[in-house]
Image: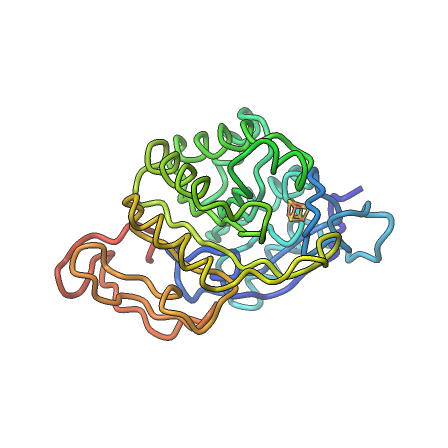
Length: 289
Ligand code: SF4
């Protein structure tokens, strides 16, 4: 039902996924179909994610047409995002294979509640994953997303093990997953299982869908989360959905100079030269060209 029937086709900055270390400033052709295998109570795209494809008006877009559309617009990256690409995986795979054969890149925004075998297949045609790690307790995952936590952690480790570029986004929801002790545990898990160089984006919750009773996340709480992540040793920690903010930028982990400046999703300058800091020549991890 989803195949070839996207409900969203749009052009976005790659920073919106969020991906800050993968071709900064690039535009993506973003594609989504209706549906999701989770039911997050705060879903921003619930009108598309919590219905079936036959309940929406859709476009007709074959994999060949998707690639052609991107190329016609001069776009080099196709993004599978907005809803959950896991549920339109066959369509994603066919577009991705075709896109790659024609020199385009594929990037994915996903909650990654998926078993290892299809993830490994997916990694063969995907260039970057932005994975939503929605919390760090089974209780939160079950209550707010409808899924258990452990398979998501295993899936994230699988992507990392395949050597695909990976960034994490953690939406901080007031009273539900903003316990700072648990944020520290999450950051320690990231350090131990993924290393210190995986970028992490702490996202601001905006009241939506079934959690309209909660307030927006205070920026001070997001800043505390960021401080904890930096204290644990994670090197690239961003705030998402908060702009302008110093935590929109990328800093060299060694000399601390600002190597990429952003205003929210907008790239304003990129000083990285051949993957290194222009001042101290430290390698900045990512895909830059
Ligand atoms: S995984 Fe994403 S698309 Fe699916 S319900 Fe949760 S927030 Fe919405």
